Image (cartoon, rainbow, N blue to C red; front, side, top):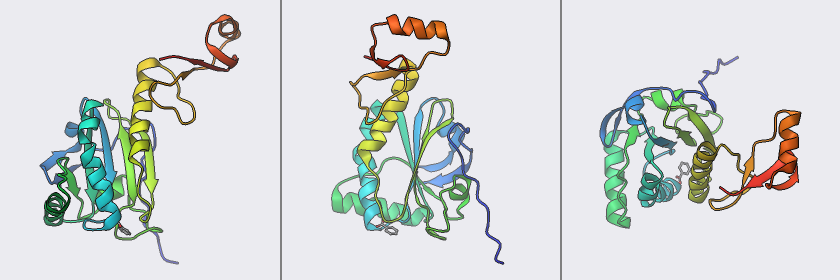
Amino acid sequence: MEQQEVFTMPRIGDMAPDFKAMTTQGMIQFSEYIKGSWTILFSHPADFTPVCTTEMSGFAILEDKFKALDTKLIGLSIDSIHSHIAWVHNVKEKMGILMKFPIIADIDMKVAKLYGMLQPGESETAAVRAVFFIDPAGKIRLIMYYPLNVGRNMDEIIRSLQALQAADKYKVALPLNWKPGEMAIVPPPKTVDEMEERIKSDYEMVDFYLAKKKI
Ligand code: BEZ
């Protein structure tokens, strides 16, 4: 039977694996790049392909919004630096959109393998559409994987980032379809005393375990 190569799959709660790689902004040591701010690391299957072009220009259009959310962007595909540069130039020329964020040229698939972006059942040669949300302490907080033929949703990427940041800032959890400005869930009580206190509180409550407050 053919032996399948086993790839690592980073998980939520793991520290983001470190690497050194060539990007469209020069050589980057990832642990240095991500230090002290939120980071979104995302892969695309290939340069000069239609869905990827819509997605990467989507990230570029929102780069200032990510910056305002204290978040750096960094892309990746298993293409050469020459291909990346030509694609960045082409998108600027044809669409007037400049991808200023670094794009990793992962020609030896080192980073794609490290981050579980290479999923052979989907493609042996191209990274799937992965999105890693990494917090300022370097911890992976949320992971999205999309197949080759379905583009991501920028609204959901921004919403997820804002939800992670709100959860940290206010020590709350965020309910289904939460958006900034909406109420957040107060973590459930852990003792009977806390439960009784909760019942007397002025939180908006379905019952003691499902209480919401304004943040
Ligand atoms: C695309 O971005 O359009 C694409 C890339 C790889 C496979 C299929 C579609």
